[in-house]
Image (cartoon, one colour):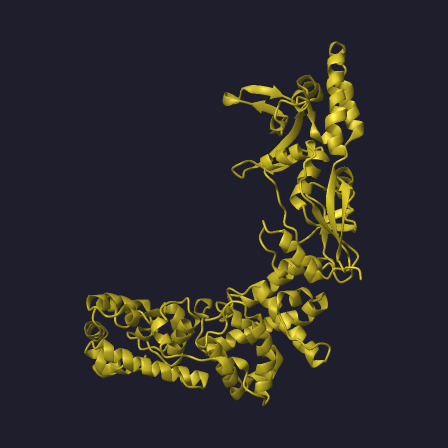
Length: 588
């Protein structure tokens, strides 16, 4: 039984390969980023060719598969041509082929960079005397010079001038971009032999070039791996990223942009329009969606596409993994794109109801993806109070159970059908069943790096916490207007002076949302001192301030008497009660 393979291996002459690039039979897929090799690497590449050393293989993809269509673009340096459909696309070897094409085929100076990364234009030359001398290192025989073809030393002293063909011939410096152009090489050769006094000497040198140097370029064979056109898109992309280890991984958005461009659809432009709608400053929810990405949208679209295919019994799997996004068609994107945008907007409105007002306080940005798809599928049904309460329980179970860390695509795919089925009378989603919160976790929730930390900060605002000074409940206006953030109740400085365990004083149990003005008054004072200060400055009665403190789940007796241990245990108990309330289950 013969082995099944998706590729062929062969060799192709460098001359034919570069000619196919010039004729646009070989192009780049539009997802290939532009790339410029530095001057030294281009020289080393030419040196390797001149010695018949291997420079590595190139990988191509045959075009013609209707399911794997990427918008093509010519190799850098080709301009003023009418776009044609190529026979193949370069997947690996772009930098080498671009460098060789520009230095050996084009007549313009090569765009490259110097050792400091500065963009420069260079011409490449072969020093005839040095390249035919076996005792001279090849690195000395191939050089690059500036755009004006003049070599200068310190003080701008001219060391060499190759600015016209006569000067090139006199110096014995032949441009490398003549070697693969026989007619132009003949013109240069004619001028080289125009001096009758040097014909004999130059004939010997030219003979060595013809026998020892030029054939290495004209006959150079390049290994080519050709992916057959029936190779699936996800395999093409995987192969590309496997060989492109030196670059930055492509996003699915970049790959789909190239794919949709083949149908004359500008995905990037369309995404910018959608993003502007999501982050419009006229919308009160724009700050929640400030960090939304194109990939987030595509994952939501993939969930909706695969879920609805499953409902129609066209497939069985709901998924939003990379390979599934790459399978999205333009029709899928058009069908679900605007609906997904509206889903994110509805999700943001829901999160505002939960007292989440900015992306900074969003426990899991990734949880927006299944949340948006859930709202799209529910439609008007999502405006029912019981339905929103169920969504809230699912949401907070995921946050406090800390279930949406890295690599949550599989969970997203379960969430959409499970939450919809639960709302319609089915069993609880696995997110609710799997979520647990241990009381000991409260001690280690100390920074915004934890989703549960952010979640409890939000739940304290949602439970009705009022600012110590203003007595105003925290809503979107006070959140931004008063600079609400999470601050210590027993100040850090006070705790350190009194040798209170950092594990306790720096935990979420000793923190609460307050305005920056209130936090400045608190300073590093004992609670009994700063509470008296607030009462006196703001002309509050003790009972009025006590009522405000209770909205933060603070035990009055313990804070008034600076009793940290009692305060901590009492507040921990009340935080646990809030957690149990939103999750609908007991804390461990």
